[in-house]
Image (cartoon, rainbow, N blue to C red; front, top):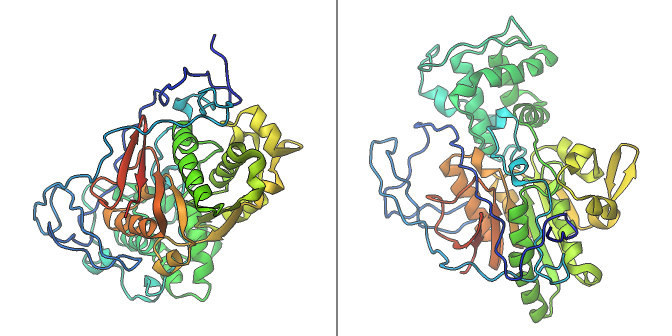
Length: 439
């Protein structure tokens, strides 16, 4: 029986490859032909959210105008898999850093925001949002009382007297989209009805239309906007989620960046966790940094910027207290080293908390994105899957602008930048792609 490393994973022969893991098929989020049209092939996009122009990567298929756009190449592709660095978790013996429950428990593709999955990082409405706008895009082009083809009328199990009309659904759906970029497909109408019924009851409103107007005009609309996003989305995350990707981060991405910083004489590292939820991802990265740098960690200037939508989940992240389920993919040795047991709960150690700076941010707000400190590494996992292509381009361009030269972007295993961006150089590993900024 092969030996195991600290994380419980069997050791691999020296020079062994990455885990035999294949990404799950990318789920197809809802689409809508009513979205803003893309420029024709060969055109140049308007300035991005960060002020730079990028060539459009036109997707195949039909635009809202009926034009057919050719598929563009994915971009530069690395023909090789960079050599794996020695694992600091195994004392340089070539043992692999996987060591968490088997992949089938970790690499489930996320479902839609209303289906119980990780919630993207967004927040208060940006300037010029429909909080002060008289109409929403879809409702402006549909007659009152119109019916979506093939969409049955649902009844809320919470309020039997409440039913959401097609027009009310479109108003709320488009309002959510314009606030944070999350797109809710029309077949999720009944979930919008169910999730919002209690908010309507708590506010003593009589209909979904009244709730829509409350979100736009009431003096407490900004507070309610946060509650809206908390209601229509759900958090599903854990420590050390997607171990194959974390292994690539530990063995390939991180050592290269650390070595480059050492050579410059500036032991400074900045990582951005966009969509941090209740803090499991940024604290996982802090643990890996402690394990890699060991006694050297105190000599480094390290900051992990962690952003999310909800003030409630950010408050939980700052507390750093978790139940056993959140640690289900964490080896006992790591739990013992970096957590303090408090009854049935586990508190993250203070030295890890000091490495992470939590804050609320809206990925749809270019001014907020500009204020994020430049990073060498960006993690944005299971977030852009909820965005349409227009919103994906905006967010990915912002990440590109934020990254320093030779910086790395890591996204969810079921997500892809195909037809979204050609700005990055692709580095292929088994089961993982690293998006590298080279210019």
